[in-house]
Amino acid sequence: MKTKLKTGGGGHFAFLLLLLSGLILAAACISVTMGAVEISPLNVLKIIVNKSTGCEIFECLWEKKTETIIWNIRFPRVLLAFIVGAGLSLCGVLMQALTKNSLADPYVLGISSGASAGAVSVMVLGFFQFLGGYAVIAGATLGAMLSIILSMKIASVRGRITSTQLVLAGIATSALFSAITNLIIYGGGASDKTKTALYWMVGSLSGASWGRLRYVSVVFLVTIIVIFLFSKELDVLLLGDDVAETLGVDTGKLKWVIIIASTVLTGVVVSVSGVIGFIGLVVPHIIRRIAGSGHRKLIPLSLLGGGLFAVIADLLSRILISPEELQIGVISAFFGAPFFLYLIRKGSMAKG
Image (tube, rainbow, N blue to C red; front, side, top):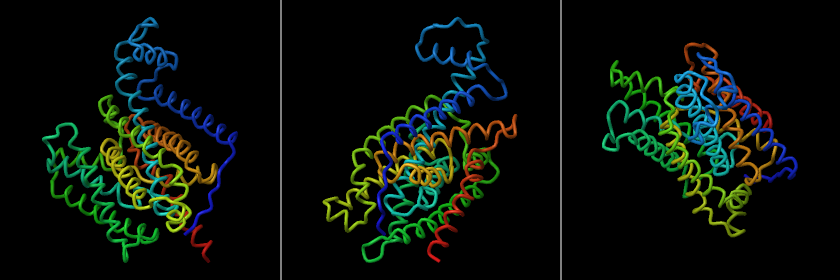
């Protein structure tokens, strides 16, 4: 399937960047100030400035617990939400370029389910405990790698993989790893570890901390840099493998770069957030419609769009049934599932 590349103008791109950045800033400010304990935006700003600079630029006129809530709980949670959303959106862009199918994302292709199975096996069965705090990330990354390799093996016919076959193989792989996850959960009985795993599986950022944010940020930034180096090749790949090879692109190498980058980033993101579906499907699809398919514009806008989606979803998860918390995976599925069905129906009507 060949895809015609569309690109927006420079002014249009700059406007979208500023718009999304402004919306993210507004959503982040609201998210940090709202909660069981409401704190004035001015005090939030003063606390963040003081903590970020390491100096008491503003006089401390608030309680110590207020500072703890902002700096150690809410602020890292907002930052982690942005990175999780942006990371999943980037993986969606890469999966859609790999399969040339707008319905592809880490969730649909089974990568998220594989990562979930790997992480749950660590939580419940105690695998990789010698890695300490990095055990879950190791399990999630390994599970994600196994799932995409299995999907590609199933989809391969005479050495070639079509986008339709890969999506179907991904759905089957996702079901398989979901079954494995459930088997581990129910095999673990009613222990505290099982309850933790069940809560984590639906997607939650309640465990956000500066420590988790640190290693997720490193993987996230490295992945972005690597992918940007191949942005032109990604554009050519959308034209089809045969055309890309004719134009000098090593499609085999490029596909492995996409697979490794997506798998590692998805594994790391899932290890801290649980399974949050549909961000990698909804956001890149909308951004592509607005800004075109050129990856030099699509990638940064998708990063901002995914981050915005996750920050808003996390805010809703905290305030909808306050003082209780609704898992962010429920919010993303509530908006993402209808959109997914819309895309399927639209595709069926176009073919008919």
